[in-house]
Length: 69
Image 1: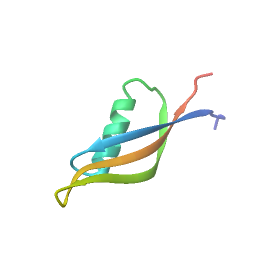
Image 2: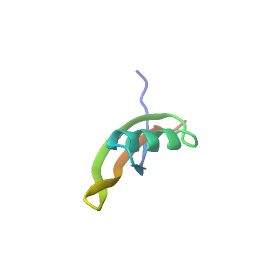
Image 3: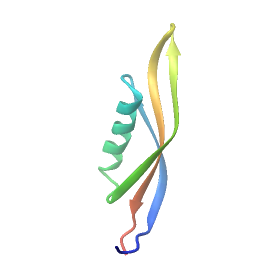
């Protein structure tokens, strides 16, 4: 297995449906401009409440993508 080097960035995905949807949205959008995404880590989940209901879900992710050598 070759040695790999990854760069790590932080993303915040948002959804009105779920934390999973917020996570998937962030990865899908980042994949359009970042090539070689190899992993992610959810570091925080949070949301917004309005009128006693969850209005938005947010997922904060660390995303690693391979650096080409």
